[in-house]
Length: 325
Image 1: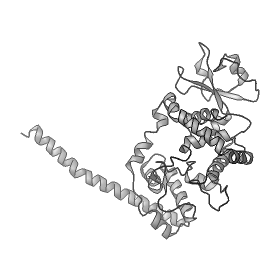
Image 2 (image 1 turned 90 degrees about the vertical axis):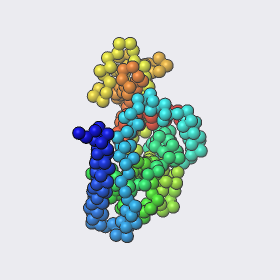
Image 3 (image 1 turned 30 degrees about the horizontal axis):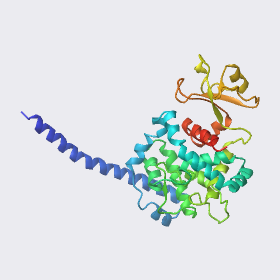
Image 4 (image 1 turned 180 degrees about the horizontal axis):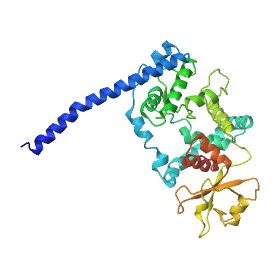
């Protein structure tokens, strides 16, 4: 009769034999996927030379797949996320940027119709004012997600867009880093958005969202304007709910004028009545449920969500921008 220690040894030996076979199969699967992508890229007019250089070191990155399943917007409460993203340090540094870039921001606001404080808030949330633009090889990040991640078709398409940008000379074929999801530069544009909305604002012939502050801010403004930003409104405001308020009215399915929310007893944080603006329709958002913070948000809030489909993201940009008034 075989002892338990012997059985354990046999099991471990079996795993040791299986693991290399599985790893080899995964690598073979990625290589086949990459070869199919290469053929599609050639059909799109991307040269063999560009593909040889850009795809030379492409490899799947396990960390990228792990991060896709562990995004902070889904793991953290709004109270935790907001404290982390809208920090006092970021508020102070954002105010300095508002002062240092004053003329540039107002010129861009005049051209694209996006208030300076929202541009600086976006800049701060996306890349900490350019300090964190990503440390993942962009080609490998997009290839990993296109091959084995969720929304594989989307990320495959984005990789083809990145290769097109390399072919056109807009991006370097090597040494190009991104977020884990393939977002580029200080404004964290996906390659397709880089292609459509990046701006050469400083006029040097390059759409540089990596090192040119003018190009970064103008590109963000152009994209936000395209998404439907209304400069005559704001994003929303934190509010107080009255005792016994029916929180079933929260959520995107209920949209009412500010006057109606005021009649229901909702107040500003200082206890004052809501603004008397008949043109503002508002939605009640309770990101942490009935016991957490409450917000009345307007159309521009949902424009921010078209940039990033996360309540936490839009609330972060909105609340951070309020500190820059």
